[in-house]
Image 1 (tube, rainbow, N blue to C red):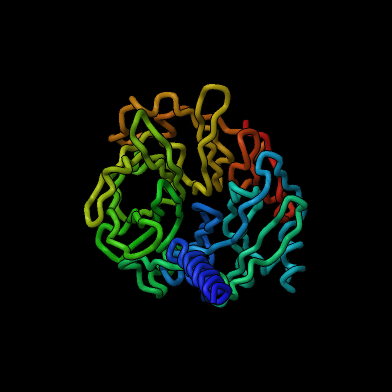
Image 2: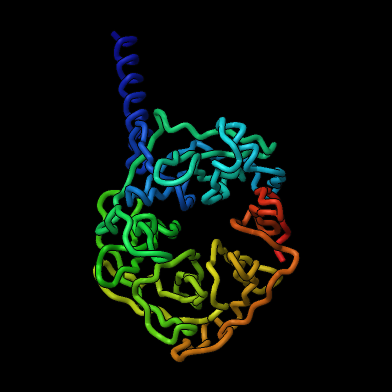
Length: 367
């Protein structure tokens, strides 16, 4: 009788632990069906957030990748696009690397990739470990949850000539996990189209986002339909902020506590970094006793932006010519950088496209 009671107790305890594991962060085992894979961000305990702009949905995936040494991580892979193509049975021309993110727990690198071109391309997630080995992240029987973004643009092509586009591809332009919430930037189908949506994690429900408005100094006007291209979190004084970069290239700060569902918020433009340019990726890092932003751009190289005056600088509210606001320098040694993320306190990992068009993965010292 005692033995049966003990066995029953052990079985009940095992079932309870299993149920607890399965319900961690509300994740359930299954096979998520991604239609696209764009912006990436890491949350707690190796949870990887993946933006699926085609479905206007963010997925949370349990990578179970929680052990490693980020302080010693370094990546060097020449012709990464070819290596990925060989792995996936494609050609380098059919491979598009959309984003990369470092797992802060393991130091492993994750990539979102499109195999093929156009609307029929296939989304793929890849992992690169400390030995620079590339493997596919399986989406079969993985613990996951998802959150749909309200009021996305229609999944349809509109416009003429250079303005012909499908705005659904911009329903999610960047994501970031900050203090228990996932922040999602992108376009909606509303009049004030540019949105910042804050989603508590674990995912339960999604409220409407905040409509964000900015003054674009190079254009000399307020704008509500241009989406944030990339953003990062930064504390100014005792207040958490999002620093967001837009096309042509306003840098804007938003106080996180002011981001309210269903409200409209005007950001403060703290720099104009030059027109005819798209910002691609950005993060904050410390060098000595000072903080800097590192921003990769399509046309203006990698910028190192000083944050020393970020708390007291006046917002730009008049048309300007050239650049204005926070001071920056262009890092001449970093050319062709299309994606980057911080590895640790001393290094970043960067995807660099060379003159031949080949995409190379490399580790760079923080400038």
